[in-house]
Image: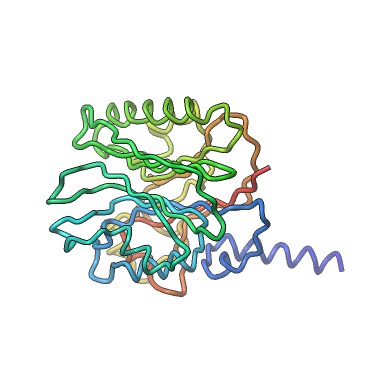
Length: 289
């Protein structure tokens, strides 16, 4: 009996390590375990197969409690005047809500920014706000979205993509803001998003002064040229050529937690993640203690 139990546990671990999204969504989650995900959706228009429906199918399969999304338009000419967050939420179902954070406004008669969405069946929102981060020496301003839930805080951002000095200035604002508001709250504070920097960069070194990286250091941004040379689509992030620039972190404020699982998702039954966006979705399962 003990050997059978051991084999069952080993099989489950191997199944999860492959990041089969259907297996993940079937995983029985205890009340104190939440799934947080981050995904750069590329205005739902990176490839001809991209779109709200394609992305929603993937995210329903992944089944996060909270999802931070980067690169969304609001009422712009280039994306047909759609409020993209709302268009996505309609495909997710009535039990989903969200908060949009504009970074560029006005932009093509509308705005460009990020969003945080959540499943109201599992997450009780207490409050939230957005903040524009100055571009500094970078190319454009960025945004911060923050939602306080009953048992935790989740923030999302999308940092400057060219200048590390601008990313550092944006990080300092994010960290100071969240430490001031929630540093002594006793709640875990998570930060998610496309940081436009690799694990060994100065950007991540600065983040690690106040934050702990919870997500796995695997490819989240596939290399287009290398992918074009592949005859068969990768079945895991380890097989995918590219870089790791999307992360989920937690503020070092003394809150207790346990990481149950984390991965970068590649294998979905509901569609191809490689034609939905130019990034890959990242998730962390965390038990709040």
